[in-house]
Image 1 (cartoon, rainbow, N blue to C red):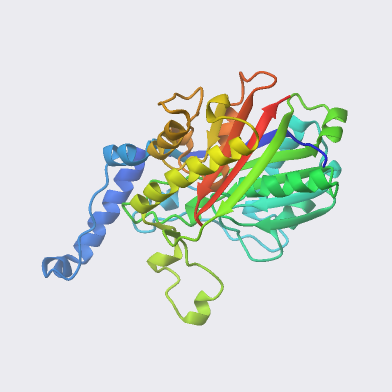
Image 2 (tube, rainbow, N blue to C red):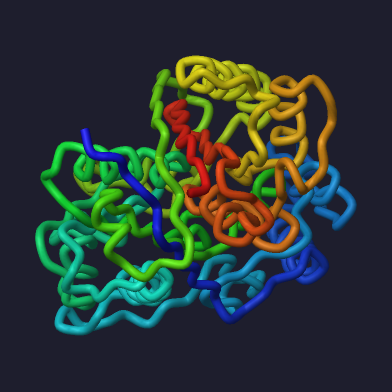
Length: 376
């Protein structure tokens, strides 16, 4: 089996920022409109009033302070509460492909590669813009990459699951170089009208180039990160769900119904995923001959500050700071599958040759994916 190496990463960051303060003003205006509209039903006890949100509530619940979005005005319009994207012609580059190409070009540049040297493109994200043709094929064509492309979705674990597929392709020799892209337009599937989750997500796209060690040695990448091992697990849970799909129109259901956007039982997710993720990482490290305390840095999925802190504490036996487990939540919010890759992209500096790190995601499914890497 040929060793697999990560040689470059890229990050597309949208141009617009929504602060918690801006979001709260918008949400509370929406709440006031809804409460006035349904005042009689609320007074009769037939309907609950929409409670106000607050900056303090958001930051205590999540650790998030802002988020990047592709389109801002539609989200903050209390009569709309969702992005407003202009439709594109079929012959035009799609929005998801556009941001993926941006991140991909950065990753290719970091790896010292041309798009034509890529043998496969994996587009892995929580939601795809369309069912077919595959987003990966469009991204492949827009870049001028070779080989094949396919889409995959494991919600917030899509990136780590895709890195395993890329690493396996390299290990078995079916590809020399694979590009993984994670375009997350989460603003389009977040329910901005729900106080319990209206602050959670932000838009972004990450990319990574995975090569064989032989290929990497021939290239010009400034950094080489050997993939020592990957480990994936899924355990079915209904606690994070989105029912939007192609069967909706056949069911004659409301396309704007609450279940057609992101939903979660947050407390249950926290209680169940923390021990699952911590045990998964520990078992993976033990299988590779490492203890959790041997790990120089943990690049974890960025969903909730308290969740990340507790997972690492379970692993190493004490609270740690950003040097061991960097947090990008306060700036980016939850970016679905891209979160752990953003952390890796921004916070792998300072690690020496031989240092070991863990990229780990966890989310709907439940799904947990871990990638153990070593700086070469």
